Image (tube, rainbow, N blue to C red; front, side, top):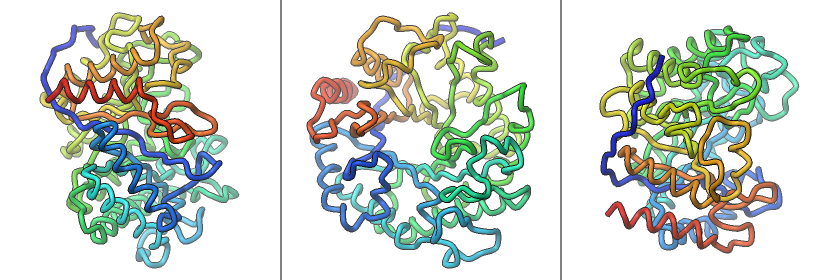
Length: 381
């Protein structure tokens, strides 16, 4: 059983970031990087303003496999050269964006999203990578699925680093992807109802991670880890070891079995988890699982500011009666106390469907959120 030890405070000066989702069209999922030349001036302006107004020094973006393909849903196959399957114009756009981040004195975390973590024959009803999906490539049977994925991750990393003039502005690459949602945390946790998912995921990670790590020169970050705080359905009666099973599993696979720890561990973080309602200090347990020195290599992601209040419902998270600004202060304070390598907030801008940005859809900044970010940065100098 995991313990509930109180936190240890460590001084640290972190990355200060946002998930970068500039809204140029009415569609909140508009892939602006596909058409980067037409939006580049506006992006460069937004990056400069992030630096000046928010003292931001990191942005995070998802690079989705469909956008990298000549024809979405037609994934690369093992053994193919990049010219056979890749949308090279898109990859050039990603390289240009890296250089534009450099010009704004901002680093960029690039999360590479492949949906082929398990074959489509496993949990086929929920799998997006199956025949008929016009966007996501079909996830083949093993071992073809992870051979193709390993080559895709490596090819994208190699191409972007070779074509960016300032590849050192890549803070890290993260090996990402979710077989059901696509751009979401991989399913690394235990699920007693579907154990075959975790078994296939373990085989995928162990086959793909070494190739991912060897690609390019920039640091490699773990798949984004997800602690589970739900208090309903399957998770209602689960204890801390099960809620943190994704951390236990990935640490075993990478650090103990492969002996290839990432340069950075990346995890989604929630306010009121240290301690949560069950009395467990989850952040401290995560650091304990990942091992000595891991706090300084942890990037705390998906931080919640405005527009996230409903996400605390039906969870074991504490902080039940605080405003959204207090949620963000709690998270930034936790990152500072534990000495994490950095953090990024979800998100840069509101969308027509969500009000979770630090900037409104109109372009106006949310001064109360920006002040919290700037005050936190000043306190760490």
